[in-house]
Image (cartoon, rainbow, N blue to C red; front, side, top):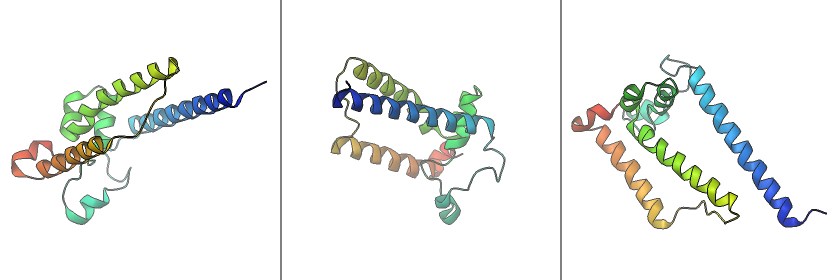
Length: 138
């Protein structure tokens, strides 16, 4: 007989597997369909309206370049994506390790963490649009 706790673990395990599969498919699509070619993906609405680079501008190109082993080109496209990718990998490994030990995992950022992420994105967006940060623009 299956207990409620076992049922929840099975569903959460299937959810994690589905999330990993979708992320893998998304990265595979970006690896296969070159975002450097105009018209392959939608234009960034923020950039289209303002002419400014948002924190995500160049992110698809950076992921594409990373999947093809072009680290320096990826850094030029979106340094934030390239620098955060290893952090996300380490975070994912920690989550997997905690789950394998049966420990709970909290996926919610603290208010301080949320503020830090927002500040990082804002500073990156501002600097890449200034003459001093022109190297950060895609």
